[in-house]
Every structure is written in C-alpha cells, then in structure tokens.
Image (cartoon, rainbow, N blue to C red; front, top):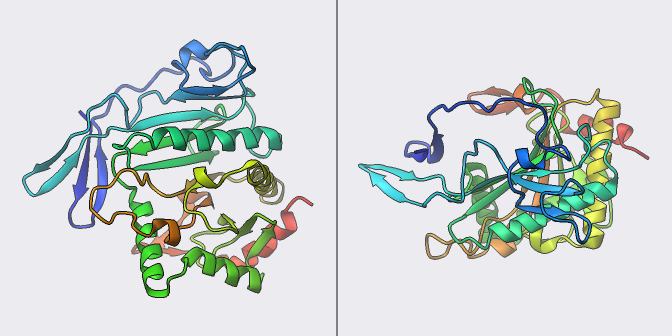
Length: 328
C-alpha cells in the first residue's frame, strides 16, 4: 500500500510508492474514438443528448492511469512510533482539454480554453464536497523533458493533506494579514500596477506580471484584481473569457517570442475549508489569501544554491521582453 510519510525534521510530506509496472503505450487513449481505453469518464462537456463515453465531447475528465491518489482507498491516519503516516486517499484526474491531439494553449481557440476553465471550477466544486480531501492542485505541463508529445490535458490532484508549497503560501499570507489586516496579494497588486515595470499586461479583471522575486526567467503570475481566495467561487462568464484570452496570449507570446519553451502552469487556490483538522484552521483565509495562476518556464532548469533560487534575468527585463512579444 502506498503511504504519505511526514519528515519531522523539515515538516514536509513524501509519497512512498513501491515501483509498479509502467503502462504500455498502445497509441493515444485520449483521442475521440478511444474512450473505452481511458476509463469511464468522470465528467464531460458534450452536446445535449450525447451519451457518456461517446466520442463527441468538447472537454472530458477521466481517471489518471496508475494514479498516485485514489478515491476508493480508505483514509487512515496513524502514528508509527514518533512518525506520522497517512494513506494517499484522494483523486488523480486528467482534464482532456480538446478533442484535437496536437492542440496547445497557443493553438486552441479562446472559447475552448474558456470551457477548460469552467471544468476546473466544476472539478474543484465536486471534489471539495468530500471532507476527507484537504487540498487540490490543478496543473498542466507543456513540453516536459523526456516525455513524448501527448494529448493536451490538465492534471487534477486531490489529497488528504495540504501541499507543502500551499502551506507556506498560506502561512505567509496569514502572518502578513495578522500584522497589517490587509491581503498581501492585494497590496502587491497595488504596488505593481503603480510601478508598471514588472506588469506584462493589464485588463479590467486581471493583471499578468513577472513577480518581484521571480525564481527564473519568464516566470509569470496572473492574478485577479478583485480579492477572492477561491478560484471556483470567483470565476464568472466575463472573468472566464478574460482569463482564457490571457492564457492564450501568454502561450502565444512564449511560442512566438521565445521559441516555444516548456512550462508548468498551476492554479493556486484555497484548500478545502470544509476539511478542518485543528480548530481555527482557515479562520481568516477568506481575507488573507488571494487565488492566482503561476506559470514557470522550464522549471527543470531552475538554478539553486543551498535552496536559494538564482535568476540571471532581472524580472524587469523579462517583463519588458514579454510585453514586446505579447500578441497585439
């Protein structure tokens, strides 16, 4: 049985997973017409009257094969002497973003990207009904080294703990709020919009910027200008269209101006507030946390010294280069 084990010296979790047998590659199991090979669909957008698992879908959600986290497993928390262990109950899903096998964010129509963003919302709402799920990460990877080109998908990972990076973000946001009684991200947005030098583009709804302490060249954050801690509670028709346009433009800027590098995109949103372990969990999260999207270009090339990121491209220069490449 797989196990989540906590390292008490660093406070982070490690998934211990005995090596299994890799799945055989028998062609793309995610293209229309191969629905039986990808497993029964969890959700889909399809024409009215179309049956589940039929090939006429627009966006489709399927279980990930050889998943790290499974909803069928029983959640067990136990102490192993001084150590803590939790079984990896949760969910590992793939959101198939388009019926077209070769689509990318740079080639998809904005209407298709908008449909994907609505599916993000639907999966977050559905999975957060389960009180044993504490945190959910939605991410997508473009051109991962060593991985052949594949059908475009986003990955949904739901787990019974809080991701280490999310926990650090929540702690910093909470401490800032406790001291200043203001949202850290809202303050950052006001300063960045005023300064302009790291802003890539600005709409009535969102800001796309290179963060002040970017971890690497071309790192971009997309933040809603209106405060909200949860993606799924904030997204609306107008905001989904605006965000779809921004994601399309960012992907096209990277493709046209920087030779289409690989990147990782992640939605940073509040954990499941229905799942509380300690009294006071998430007490001020609606005021102190601010959902956003982070895009990190070629994360595998990140340069670090003793855990400190080393970025040789000043964020101000990266923002200027992105503005020049941004679709007009």
